[in-house]
Image (cartoon, rainbow, N blue to C red; front, side, top):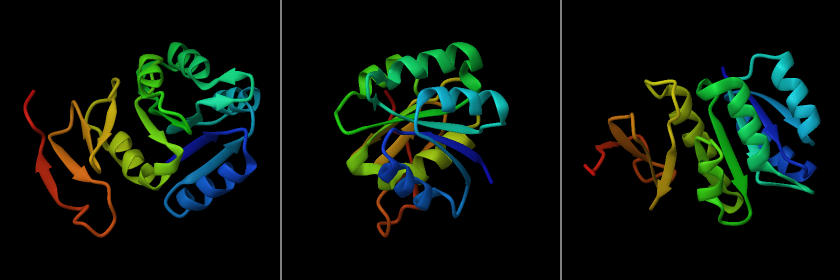
Length: 156
């Protein structure tokens, strides 16, 4: 069971994400970046989920600070209501999910926690499949459509 820290300034979103993830993981919810920073330093966290828009604070700043301090070993996923995947990944996030697609989080979390390498492992979600530069297969993210089936990644 992984310990996941979720940082979002919306109590509703925190409740939804906790409900979605706590069956498989221990979920630590934080409503602001100061609390999240304290929790990161107090507890062993296996994965971090950060909202892109935290009131006046941008999630990418927090991602950069966490990446600078913890290095690449801590997987980070950025959630956003707006399409800012490039900014999130440039800041050091390992994955990006639009809030409307939050149902794919369990698959992305599994991918990041089981990646054979512990260096940055950007998860890209395209057409319902997640892929990783270090993992030999892609998996479907849509429930009920053979999500457990694996297929080789296309060569670049």
